[in-house]
Length: 476
Image (tube, rainbow, N blue to C red; front, side, top):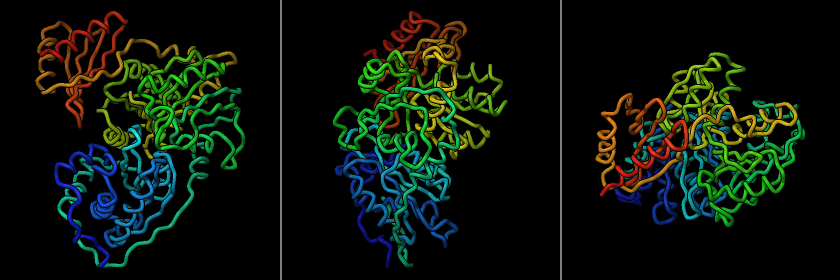
Protein backbone atom coordinates (compact mmCIF):
# COMPACT_ATOMS: atom_id res chain seq x y z
CA UNK A 1 0.00 0.00 0.00
CA UNK A 2 1.44 3.39 -1.04
CA UNK A 3 -0.89 5.47 1.13
CA UNK A 4 -0.09 6.61 4.66
CA UNK A 5 -3.52 6.82 6.30
CA UNK A 6 -2.39 4.66 9.19
CA UNK A 7 -0.04 7.34 10.58
CA UNK A 8 -1.15 9.18 13.67
CA UNK A 9 -1.83 12.89 13.29
CA UNK A 10 1.35 14.86 14.07
CA UNK A 11 -0.60 17.80 15.45
CA UNK A 12 -3.77 18.27 17.47
CA UNK A 13 -6.56 20.58 16.30
CA UNK A 14 -5.23 23.61 18.14
CA UNK A 15 -1.76 23.08 16.71
CA UNK A 16 -3.10 22.76 13.17
CA UNK A 17 -5.09 25.96 13.58
CA UNK A 18 -1.86 27.78 14.42
CA UNK A 19 -0.16 26.58 11.23
CA UNK A 20 -2.99 26.74 8.68
CA UNK A 21 -3.41 30.46 7.98
CA UNK A 22 -5.94 32.22 5.75
CA UNK A 23 -3.71 32.06 2.66
CA UNK A 24 -0.92 29.59 3.39
CA UNK A 25 0.70 27.19 5.87
CA UNK A 26 3.31 28.72 8.15
CA UNK A 27 4.92 28.04 11.50
CA UNK A 28 8.00 27.59 13.65
CA UNK A 29 10.24 24.68 12.63
CA UNK A 30 10.10 22.10 14.12
CA UNK A 31 7.85 23.11 17.03
CA UNK A 32 4.81 23.84 14.87
CA UNK A 33 5.79 22.64 11.39
CA UNK A 34 7.94 19.57 10.82
CA UNK A 35 8.59 16.87 8.22
CA UNK A 36 5.76 14.63 9.46
CA UNK A 37 3.26 17.45 9.01
CA UNK A 38 4.71 18.40 5.62
CA UNK A 39 4.30 14.78 4.44
CA UNK A 40 0.63 14.71 5.42
CA UNK A 41 -0.03 18.10 3.82
CA UNK A 42 1.47 16.78 0.59
CA UNK A 43 -0.90 13.82 0.68
CA UNK A 44 -3.87 16.03 1.55
CA UNK A 45 -2.97 18.41 -1.31
CA UNK A 46 -3.37 15.53 -3.79
CA UNK A 47 -6.69 14.45 -2.29
CA UNK A 48 -8.36 17.84 -1.94
CA UNK A 49 -7.35 19.13 -5.37
CA UNK A 50 -8.00 15.83 -7.15
CA UNK A 51 -4.52 15.86 -8.70
CA UNK A 52 -4.30 12.18 -9.65
CA UNK A 53 -4.94 11.39 -13.31
CA UNK A 54 -7.64 8.96 -12.21
CA UNK A 55 -9.39 11.91 -10.51
CA UNK A 56 -9.20 14.00 -13.67
CA UNK A 57 -6.12 15.92 -12.52
CA UNK A 58 -2.76 16.48 -14.19
CA UNK A 59 -1.00 13.77 -12.21
CA UNK A 60 1.92 15.89 -11.01
CA UNK A 61 2.86 18.72 -8.65
CA UNK A 62 5.65 21.28 -9.11
CA UNK A 63 7.62 22.29 -5.99
CA UNK A 64 9.99 25.19 -5.34
CA UNK A 65 11.76 26.39 -2.22
CA UNK A 66 13.54 29.42 -0.85
CA UNK A 67 16.94 29.46 0.87
CA UNK A 68 15.81 28.61 4.43
CA UNK A 69 17.91 25.86 6.07
CA UNK A 70 14.81 23.79 6.89
CA UNK A 71 13.63 23.73 3.28
CA UNK A 72 15.33 20.57 2.02
CA UNK A 73 13.87 18.30 4.69
CA UNK A 74 10.38 19.76 4.46
CA UNK A 75 10.31 19.64 0.66
CA UNK A 76 11.48 16.02 0.62
CA UNK A 77 8.75 15.07 3.09
CA UNK A 78 6.02 16.91 1.19
CA UNK A 79 7.16 15.29 -2.06
CA UNK A 80 7.05 11.91 -0.34
CA UNK A 81 3.45 12.56 0.69
CA UNK A 82 2.52 13.54 -2.88
CA UNK A 83 4.23 10.48 -4.38
CA UNK A 84 2.65 8.15 -1.82
CA UNK A 85 -0.75 9.26 -3.10
CA UNK A 86 0.10 8.31 -6.69
CA UNK A 87 1.28 11.63 -8.15
CA UNK A 88 4.58 12.69 -9.64
CA UNK A 89 6.68 15.61 -8.40
CA UNK A 90 8.74 18.09 -10.40
CA UNK A 91 11.24 19.90 -8.18
CA UNK A 92 12.50 23.20 -9.57
CA UNK A 93 14.89 23.79 -6.66
CA UNK A 94 15.66 27.27 -5.37
CA UNK A 95 13.10 29.74 -6.65
CA UNK A 96 11.22 32.90 -5.84
CA UNK A 97 7.50 32.55 -5.20
CA UNK A 98 6.73 34.18 -8.53
CA UNK A 99 9.18 31.71 -10.09
CA UNK A 100 7.03 28.90 -8.72
CA UNK A 101 3.90 30.63 -10.04
CA UNK A 102 5.59 30.82 -13.45
CA UNK A 103 6.32 27.10 -13.37
CA UNK A 104 2.73 26.35 -12.32
CA UNK A 105 1.38 28.46 -15.17
CA UNK A 106 3.86 27.36 -17.80
CA UNK A 107 3.60 23.65 -16.99
CA UNK A 108 -0.12 23.69 -16.20
CA UNK A 109 0.45 22.05 -12.81
CA UNK A 110 -0.57 22.74 -9.22
CA UNK A 111 2.33 24.03 -7.18
CA UNK A 112 3.83 24.28 -3.71
CA UNK A 113 6.32 26.95 -2.74
CA UNK A 114 8.22 26.33 0.50
CA UNK A 115 8.82 29.71 2.08
CA UNK A 116 7.92 31.77 5.11
CA UNK A 117 8.23 34.94 3.03
CA UNK A 118 9.34 37.81 5.30
CA UNK A 119 9.20 35.88 8.57
CA UNK A 120 12.39 35.24 10.61
CA UNK A 121 14.72 32.31 9.94
CA UNK A 122 13.13 29.90 12.41
CA UNK A 123 9.90 29.85 10.36
CA UNK A 124 8.98 28.01 7.20
CA UNK A 125 5.75 27.40 5.32
CA UNK A 126 4.01 26.51 2.06
CA UNK A 127 2.20 28.69 -0.46
CA UNK A 128 -0.05 26.42 -2.50
CA UNK A 129 -1.69 26.96 -5.87
CA UNK A 130 -3.78 25.12 -8.40
CA UNK A 131 -2.69 24.71 -12.01
CA UNK A 132 -2.14 28.07 -13.69
CA UNK A 133 -1.10 29.66 -10.37
CA UNK A 134 -4.73 29.85 -9.21
CA UNK A 135 -4.83 30.57 -5.47
CA UNK A 136 -5.52 28.09 -2.70
CA UNK A 137 -6.85 29.75 0.45
CA UNK A 138 -9.07 28.83 3.37
CA UNK A 139 -12.22 28.84 1.26
CA UNK A 140 -10.62 27.19 -1.77
CA UNK A 141 -9.05 24.09 -0.31
CA UNK A 142 -6.76 25.00 2.58
CA UNK A 143 -9.36 24.42 5.27
CA UNK A 144 -10.28 21.07 3.73
CA UNK A 145 -6.60 20.07 3.76
CA UNK A 146 -6.31 21.02 7.41
CA UNK A 147 -9.34 18.87 8.28
CA UNK A 148 -7.97 15.95 6.27
CA UNK A 149 -4.59 16.20 8.00
CA UNK A 150 -6.36 16.03 11.35
CA UNK A 151 -8.83 13.31 10.42
CA UNK A 152 -6.56 11.06 8.38
CA UNK A 153 -5.62 10.68 4.71
CA UNK A 154 -7.69 8.12 2.74
CA UNK A 155 -5.62 5.08 1.73
CA UNK A 156 -4.31 4.81 -1.81
CA UNK A 157 -3.40 1.38 -3.21
CA UNK A 158 -1.98 2.34 -6.61
CA UNK A 159 1.62 2.83 -7.71
CA UNK A 160 3.63 5.63 -6.12
CA UNK A 161 4.69 8.67 -8.08
CA UNK A 162 8.25 9.64 -8.93
CA UNK A 163 10.39 12.76 -8.44
CA UNK A 164 12.22 14.57 -11.25
CA UNK A 165 14.11 17.86 -11.30
CA UNK A 166 13.82 20.69 -13.78
CA UNK A 167 15.54 24.07 -14.13
CA UNK A 168 12.83 26.62 -14.97
CA UNK A 169 14.89 29.73 -14.22
CA UNK A 170 15.95 30.50 -17.83
CA UNK A 171 12.36 30.22 -19.07
CA UNK A 172 11.13 32.38 -16.16
CA UNK A 173 13.68 35.10 -16.94
CA UNK A 174 12.89 35.04 -20.67
CA UNK A 175 9.17 35.21 -20.00
CA UNK A 176 9.46 38.29 -17.78
CA UNK A 177 11.71 39.96 -20.35
CA UNK A 178 9.00 39.32 -22.96
CA UNK A 179 6.42 41.19 -20.87
CA UNK A 180 8.40 44.40 -20.23
CA UNK A 181 10.93 45.82 -22.68
CA UNK A 182 13.90 47.25 -20.81
CA UNK A 183 16.32 47.28 -23.73
CA UNK A 184 15.46 50.66 -25.24
CA UNK A 185 15.71 52.86 -22.15
CA UNK A 186 18.50 55.15 -21.03
CA UNK A 187 21.22 53.87 -18.74
CA UNK A 188 20.10 53.56 -15.12
CA UNK A 189 22.07 53.04 -11.94
CA UNK A 190 20.17 50.60 -9.72
CA UNK A 191 20.88 49.38 -6.20
CA UNK A 192 19.09 46.14 -5.30
CA UNK A 193 18.79 44.84 -1.74
CA UNK A 194 17.92 41.13 -1.84
CA UNK A 195 18.07 40.81 1.95
CA UNK A 196 19.90 37.47 1.49
CA UNK A 197 16.66 36.21 -0.01
CA UNK A 198 15.68 34.78 -3.37
CA UNK A 199 16.10 38.03 -5.29
CA UNK A 200 19.82 37.32 -4.96
CA UNK A 201 19.21 34.51 -7.46
CA UNK A 202 16.40 35.93 -9.59
CA UNK A 203 17.64 39.52 -10.07
CA UNK A 204 20.87 38.47 -11.85
CA UNK A 205 18.93 35.96 -13.94
CA UNK A 206 16.28 38.45 -15.09
CA UNK A 207 18.18 41.74 -15.17
CA UNK A 208 21.62 40.38 -16.06
CA UNK A 209 22.90 38.01 -18.69
CA UNK A 210 23.06 34.79 -16.64
CA UNK A 211 20.22 33.18 -18.60
CA UNK A 212 21.89 34.01 -21.90
CA UNK A 213 19.75 37.11 -22.34
CA UNK A 214 20.97 40.34 -23.98
CA UNK A 215 22.55 42.92 -21.70
CA UNK A 216 20.28 45.70 -20.42
CA UNK A 217 21.12 49.38 -19.89
CA UNK A 218 21.30 48.82 -16.14
CA UNK A 219 24.27 49.26 -13.82
CA UNK A 220 23.29 47.12 -10.81
CA UNK A 221 24.89 47.46 -7.38
CA UNK A 222 24.00 44.35 -5.34
CA UNK A 223 23.32 44.36 -1.61
CA UNK A 224 23.12 41.05 0.26
CA UNK A 225 22.74 38.81 -2.80
CA UNK A 226 24.26 35.84 -0.94
CA UNK A 227 21.47 33.34 -0.26
CA UNK A 228 21.29 32.90 3.50
CA UNK A 229 18.11 31.87 5.24
CA UNK A 230 19.45 33.04 8.60
CA UNK A 231 19.24 36.66 7.34
CA UNK A 232 22.54 37.87 8.84
CA UNK A 233 22.19 41.51 7.73
CA UNK A 234 18.55 42.40 8.29
CA UNK A 235 15.17 40.71 8.05
CA UNK A 236 13.95 40.30 4.48
CA UNK A 237 10.83 42.32 5.22
CA UNK A 238 10.98 45.67 3.39
CA UNK A 239 7.63 46.86 4.67
CA UNK A 240 9.47 47.63 7.94
CA UNK A 241 11.35 50.95 7.55
CA UNK A 242 14.38 49.71 9.51
CA UNK A 243 15.03 47.07 6.85
CA UNK A 244 15.29 49.72 4.12
CA UNK A 245 18.01 51.83 5.73
CA UNK A 246 20.99 50.05 4.17
CA UNK A 247 19.41 50.43 0.73
CA UNK A 248 18.55 54.07 1.30
CA UNK A 249 22.12 54.87 2.33
CA UNK A 250 23.53 52.97 -0.64
CA UNK A 251 21.29 54.74 -3.16
CA UNK A 252 22.44 58.15 -1.92
CA UNK A 253 26.09 57.12 -1.60
CA UNK A 254 26.14 55.64 -5.13
CA UNK A 255 24.19 58.52 -6.65
CA UNK A 256 21.86 55.85 -8.00
CA UNK A 257 18.69 56.51 -9.95
CA UNK A 258 16.62 53.98 -8.02
CA UNK A 259 16.73 51.36 -5.28
CA UNK A 260 14.77 48.09 -5.17
CA UNK A 261 14.13 45.97 -2.08
CA UNK A 262 12.64 42.47 -2.12
CA UNK A 263 11.29 40.29 0.64
CA UNK A 264 12.59 36.78 1.35
CA UNK A 265 10.70 34.98 -1.39
CA UNK A 266 10.90 37.98 -3.75
CA UNK A 267 7.20 38.20 -4.47
CA UNK A 268 7.07 41.75 -3.06
CA UNK A 269 9.06 44.76 -4.21
CA UNK A 270 9.58 48.13 -2.53
CA UNK A 271 11.11 51.13 -4.28
CA UNK A 272 13.51 53.87 -3.10
CA UNK A 273 13.89 57.08 -5.12
CA UNK A 274 17.13 58.88 -5.91
CA UNK A 275 16.90 60.90 -2.67
CA UNK A 276 16.78 57.73 -0.57
CA UNK A 277 13.06 58.22 0.11
CA UNK A 278 10.74 55.20 0.20
CA UNK A 279 8.03 55.23 -2.46
CA UNK A 280 4.58 54.09 -1.34
CA UNK A 281 3.23 50.91 -2.93
CA UNK A 282 0.12 52.89 -3.85
CA UNK A 283 2.26 55.18 -6.02
CA UNK A 284 3.71 52.11 -7.74
CA UNK A 285 0.18 50.74 -8.23
CA UNK A 286 -0.85 54.03 -9.84
CA UNK A 287 2.23 54.10 -12.09
CA UNK A 288 1.76 50.54 -13.34
CA UNK A 289 -2.00 51.07 -13.72
CA UNK A 290 -1.31 54.04 -15.97
CA UNK A 291 1.14 51.99 -18.06
CA UNK A 292 -1.31 49.12 -18.41
CA UNK A 293 -4.18 51.43 -19.34
CA UNK A 294 -2.03 53.10 -21.97
CA UNK A 295 -1.67 49.78 -23.77
CA UNK A 296 -5.17 48.45 -22.90
CA UNK A 297 -7.55 51.42 -22.75
CA UNK A 298 -10.67 51.07 -20.65
CA UNK A 299 -9.46 48.01 -18.73
CA UNK A 300 -10.28 47.17 -15.12
CA UNK A 301 -7.66 47.65 -12.41
CA UNK A 302 -7.99 46.07 -8.96
CA UNK A 303 -6.84 47.80 -5.76
CA UNK A 304 -7.42 46.85 -2.15
CA UNK A 305 -9.29 48.90 0.43
CA UNK A 306 -6.07 50.09 2.12
CA UNK A 307 -4.75 51.68 -1.09
CA UNK A 308 -4.44 55.45 -1.38
CA UNK A 309 -7.28 57.46 -2.90
CA UNK A 310 -4.67 58.36 -5.49
CA UNK A 311 -5.08 54.93 -7.09
CA UNK A 312 -8.78 55.14 -8.11
CA UNK A 313 -8.26 58.77 -9.09
CA UNK A 314 -5.43 57.86 -11.50
CA UNK A 315 -7.38 54.90 -12.87
CA UNK A 316 -10.33 57.17 -13.62
CA UNK A 317 -8.13 59.90 -15.11
CA UNK A 318 -6.61 57.32 -17.45
CA UNK A 319 -10.01 56.05 -18.59
CA UNK A 320 -9.91 52.78 -16.66
CA UNK A 321 -12.37 51.09 -14.35
CA UNK A 322 -11.30 50.78 -10.72
CA UNK A 323 -12.42 47.81 -8.63
CA UNK A 324 -11.93 48.00 -4.86
CA UNK A 325 -11.52 44.70 -3.03
CA UNK A 326 -10.53 43.12 0.27
CA UNK A 327 -6.93 42.68 1.34
CA UNK A 328 -5.31 39.38 0.36
CA UNK A 329 -4.12 37.62 -2.76
CA UNK A 330 -7.00 35.12 -2.89
CA UNK A 331 -9.58 37.90 -3.08
CA UNK A 332 -7.64 39.97 -5.59
CA UNK A 333 -6.92 37.04 -7.90
CA UNK A 334 -10.56 35.97 -7.74
CA UNK A 335 -11.82 39.46 -8.62
CA UNK A 336 -9.29 39.74 -11.44
CA UNK A 337 -10.68 36.52 -12.90
CA UNK A 338 -14.28 37.66 -12.46
CA UNK A 339 -13.79 41.15 -13.90
CA UNK A 340 -11.09 40.49 -16.49
CA UNK A 341 -8.84 43.02 -14.76
CA UNK A 342 -5.39 43.46 -16.28
CA UNK A 343 -3.59 44.48 -13.09
CA UNK A 344 -4.01 44.65 -9.33
CA UNK A 345 -2.03 46.30 -6.55
CA UNK A 346 -1.94 46.14 -2.76
CA UNK A 347 -0.62 48.51 -0.10
CA UNK A 348 1.69 45.71 1.10
CA UNK A 349 3.82 45.69 -2.07
CA UNK A 350 2.08 42.83 -3.88
CA UNK A 351 1.37 43.47 -7.57
CA UNK A 352 -0.71 41.15 -9.77
CA UNK A 353 -0.66 40.84 -13.57
CA UNK A 354 -3.13 39.18 -15.91
CA UNK A 355 -0.22 38.37 -18.21
CA UNK A 356 1.33 36.43 -15.31
CA UNK A 357 -1.64 34.17 -14.62
CA UNK A 358 -3.09 36.91 -12.37
CA UNK A 359 -0.30 36.08 -9.89
CA UNK A 360 1.88 38.53 -8.00
CA UNK A 361 5.46 39.20 -9.04
CA UNK A 362 7.81 41.60 -7.32
CA UNK A 363 10.29 41.33 -10.18
CA UNK A 364 7.70 42.15 -12.84
CA UNK A 365 6.59 45.20 -10.85
CA UNK A 366 10.22 46.32 -10.55
CA UNK A 367 10.66 45.95 -14.30
CA UNK A 368 7.66 48.20 -14.96
CA UNK A 369 9.16 50.91 -12.74
CA UNK A 370 12.56 50.56 -14.41
CA UNK A 371 10.93 50.76 -17.85
CA UNK A 372 8.95 53.87 -16.90
CA UNK A 373 12.03 55.63 -15.55
CA UNK A 374 14.30 54.47 -18.36
CA UNK A 375 11.92 55.71 -21.05
CA UNK A 376 11.40 59.12 -19.41
CA UNK A 377 13.21 62.17 -20.87
CA UNK A 378 16.90 62.53 -19.92
CA UNK A 379 17.32 64.10 -16.51
CA UNK A 380 14.01 62.83 -15.18
CA UNK A 381 14.39 61.59 -11.63
CA UNK A 382 12.21 58.95 -10.05
CA UNK A 383 10.84 61.46 -7.54
CA UNK A 384 9.80 63.84 -10.32
CA UNK A 385 8.30 60.97 -12.33
CA UNK A 386 6.17 59.94 -9.35
CA UNK A 387 5.28 63.45 -8.14
CA UNK A 388 1.82 63.33 -9.72
CA UNK A 389 0.95 60.38 -7.50
CA UNK A 390 1.96 62.16 -4.27
CA UNK A 391 -1.44 63.60 -3.34
CA UNK A 392 -2.16 62.58 0.25
CA UNK A 393 -0.48 61.87 3.58
CA UNK A 394 -0.71 58.36 5.02
CA UNK A 395 -0.05 56.98 8.50
CA UNK A 396 1.20 53.59 7.43
CA UNK A 397 -0.17 50.53 9.21
CA UNK A 398 -0.34 50.85 13.01
CA UNK A 399 -1.07 47.79 15.16
CA UNK A 400 -2.84 47.86 18.51
CA UNK A 401 -3.13 44.90 20.88
CA UNK A 402 -6.78 44.58 21.97
CA UNK A 403 -8.74 42.05 23.99
CA UNK A 404 -11.87 42.40 21.85
CA UNK A 405 -11.34 43.68 18.30
CA UNK A 406 -15.05 43.79 17.51
CA UNK A 407 -15.86 45.87 20.60
CA UNK A 408 -13.02 48.31 19.92
CA UNK A 409 -14.17 48.71 16.32
CA UNK A 410 -17.73 49.44 17.43
CA UNK A 411 -16.50 52.10 19.87
CA UNK A 412 -14.80 53.84 16.97
CA UNK A 413 -17.87 53.50 14.75
CA UNK A 414 -20.09 55.02 17.42
CA UNK A 415 -17.69 57.93 17.91
CA UNK A 416 -17.75 58.83 14.21
CA UNK A 417 -21.32 57.84 13.30
CA UNK A 418 -22.79 61.20 14.16
CA UNK A 419 -20.27 63.30 12.27
CA UNK A 420 -21.43 65.07 9.15
CA UNK A 421 -20.38 63.56 5.80
CA UNK A 422 -18.83 60.46 7.38
CA UNK A 423 -19.75 57.20 5.68
CA UNK A 424 -18.89 53.61 6.55
CA UNK A 425 -18.33 50.36 4.70
CA UNK A 426 -17.44 46.89 5.96
CA UNK A 427 -15.77 45.40 2.88
CA UNK A 428 -12.74 44.45 4.97
CA UNK A 429 -12.85 45.49 8.59
CA UNK A 430 -14.42 48.94 8.91
CA UNK A 431 -13.62 51.90 6.67
CA UNK A 432 -14.80 55.39 7.64
CA UNK A 433 -14.60 58.08 4.96
CA UNK A 434 -14.97 61.86 4.91
CA UNK A 435 -14.11 64.38 2.17
CA UNK A 436 -10.65 65.12 3.61
CA UNK A 437 -9.71 61.77 5.16
CA UNK A 438 -10.43 58.07 5.53
CA UNK A 439 -9.32 55.32 7.87
CA UNK A 440 -9.60 51.55 7.97
CA UNK A 441 -9.66 49.34 11.07
CA UNK A 442 -9.06 45.69 10.27
CA UNK A 443 -8.54 42.79 12.69
CA UNK A 444 -5.61 40.42 12.26
CA UNK A 445 -6.47 36.89 11.14
CA UNK A 446 -4.05 35.31 13.60
CA UNK A 447 -3.31 37.73 16.46
CA UNK A 448 -5.31 39.89 18.93
CA UNK A 449 -4.52 43.00 16.90
CA UNK A 450 -6.40 45.81 15.20
CA UNK A 451 -4.60 47.32 12.21
CA UNK A 452 -5.19 51.01 11.55
CA UNK A 453 -4.47 52.86 8.29
CA UNK A 454 -5.26 56.58 7.93
CA UNK A 455 -4.96 58.87 4.93
CA UNK A 456 -5.77 62.59 4.69
CA UNK A 457 -5.23 65.67 2.56
CA UNK A 458 -2.48 66.97 4.84
CA UNK A 459 -0.27 65.87 7.73
CA UNK A 460 -2.19 67.77 10.39
CA UNK A 461 -5.50 66.19 9.47
CA UNK A 462 -3.97 62.72 9.25
CA UNK A 463 -2.31 63.02 12.64
CA UNK A 464 -5.49 64.32 14.27
CA UNK A 465 -7.61 61.44 12.94
CA UNK A 466 -4.90 58.89 13.70
CA UNK A 467 -4.48 60.00 17.30
CA UNK A 468 -8.22 60.17 17.93
CA UNK A 469 -8.87 56.68 16.59
CA UNK A 470 -5.93 55.18 18.47
CA UNK A 471 -7.11 56.74 21.72
CA UNK A 472 -10.52 55.11 21.32
CA UNK A 473 -9.09 51.73 20.28
CA UNK A 474 -6.63 51.66 23.16
CA UNK A 475 -8.83 53.01 25.93
CA UNK A 476 -8.74 50.86 29.07
